Length: 318
Image 1 (cartoon, rainbow, N blue to C red):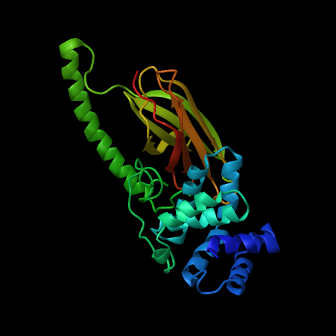
Image 2 (image 1 turned 135 degrees about the vertical axis):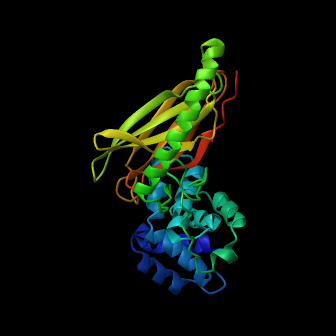
């Protein structure tokens, strides 16, 4: 019997309440399984998934209309980061096993993820990953789509630079870059009165949100400069919005693109305080083409964004 089938059989015997407590779940597995069905390491991986409420998060994403594969990637990558492990494939498989046990993940999806994961590696104790030091304007530390990736669990929880150090570096950089840009603009205006090189930023869509429980005001903006599209998170500090983090989106925003959409909320369970998820997308200039929708996680407390994958395909230039 495959381990996923064994977990599903346990749920049939004890009910979905088996996932309410990680210790109860672990005890049931230990009593039910033999060594050939599941190693200690794999049982630990599944127990961690229960302890991190991976199933609740997966079901919540699916109930909110998320694509199954994207939801598994999002929740699985979060589980890997929370475990301090680089084994995202094993974590995704573990989330699929829980979903399979309650009928929310088809057997062929669980098998595909099982075949992709290195379950021998997953059976070993998780290896802590040292958090990387990243400036405020970069994406989170490894996860699902960018370099979170690419990212959430819903969220990377990477350690950020001290605020004072970040501000000092940003101010220094802005002053230096500002002086260079000003000089370039003066030269270009002498040529034709219109600065060359690089399109100005345009906000295609934005939405504001009050994070709970702190009540912090958060603003998300879809910004494009030329065809490059960026999702920006601003956090209210001292009465003004300040850019906290940004991620380059997976698709380009071509001139003539339509129907930009941007939403953010905190409706999912299992997330830390002041954190949530959202969706951003648009249609390309060709109305016959399919649009795309990309999922992201945000954390107002840490000032971070992460991408988790998208539905549809990237629009192309008309």
